[in-house]
Amino acid sequence: MSSDLKRMIDQVSREKGLDSEILIKALEEAVKTAAKKKLGPDKDIEVSFNPELGEVEVFEFKEVVDKVTDEGLQVSLDEARKLDPECEIGDSLGMKMETSTFGRIAAQSAKQVIMQRLKEAERDIVYDDFKDRKGEIINGIVQRFDRGSIIVNLGRTEAELPPREQIPRESYRQGDRIRAYILDVKQYSRGPQIILSRTHPNFLSALFENEVPEISEGIVKIMQVAREPGSRSKIAVYSRDPDVDPVGACVGMKGSRVQAVVQELRGEKIDIVTWDPDPAKFICNALAPAEIVRVIVDEENHSMEVVVPDDQLSLAIGKGGQNVRLASRLTGWALDVVSESNYNKALKEGYESLIALESVGEKLAADLYQEGFRSAMELSQADPDELMGIEGITEDKARQLIKEAIEFVQKKKQDEEAIEVSDQLPDEKEETGTEENTEQEESSSSDV
Image (cartoon, rainbow, N blue to C red):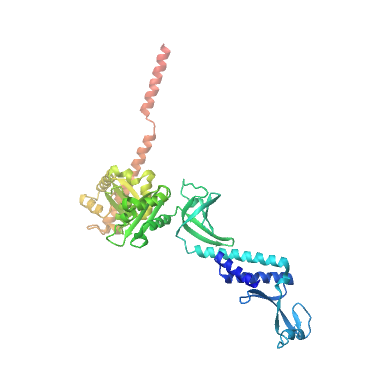
């Protein structure tokens, strides 16, 4: 029987992938629980597994006393010396018990404790296995659907793909194979919860890492990813080796590598662009395939005005503004895309507004323009110290220029408001004419 127990522990240890020490501890605890249930909670009991004998040994400890007042916890010196001739009063004497005396109910209790410990140990092993796998791609089988979530069978455990992490318009059936990104692993009392994602930008990065050896080897680095899952993505890549083209490496021979990723994402369009440390150049790359004429950088507001040829405007902006929106997210800059004709028109109007100021001639207008003050509006918002950096402008001159610019802007605003009001008023002449016509018609009608 003893060898059977030892063999059973070894077998369960192998099948469940559990350390035999965990099983032995669970067994000892189970037998101790069963013994206390049978003998009472006040008993001083110790349980240990003897690997040599392959059996669980139970010892009941009693205090050696001269006169017994509690038979459950005490033993007389005479009785104690029959078991251990060297014991003295005050010693704690352990007496081995027969485990068979615990009965069927106690054995059932022991079984329940063992099963509980097994489940806990299995949960801990699953958590330890997955807690360091966050950021990996994993394969599984769609097992069932729960309130919009897809429950995925990973073999030893289940994972959840919540609705917010599912690509729009993607559908799965029970039994389908599914690949997803391990977004998070949480430990709960009921067991670990593994959260999956197919919409996270890092899922796209991980797919490319699997498909492109240069990325996994560290030669090509993914710098940024911007996604609108199920529709379109942009990925910025950089090569540490000048001889390796990062975009070419990601595209692959005849587009094989990028197509493998597109296929996994069910047709999501992917733009692969070259990352550049120069923000303006990076913006130009990110807005591809549109051509860029000029980029005006506003460091203070972390924004850029991007000028494109008139016939490229819709291409640069993209359907529903998607291209410029993804480029903005990819680069981290706020982008304003304008057509070349509108930009030139704005420049002309801005320059003319500077010339219109009493204290500004052509040379000063050119100098102001060169320093970034391209209109009376921009000049009205300037600080005197900024203008004093321009040759020939004193503090008084700077304040005068700003004052004139403010007055110009205010007058222009008032004029525009007046025009707006007049456009909304009915034309008196037309109304008078209408009334006269009506009277004539009535007169004619009465004559008849």
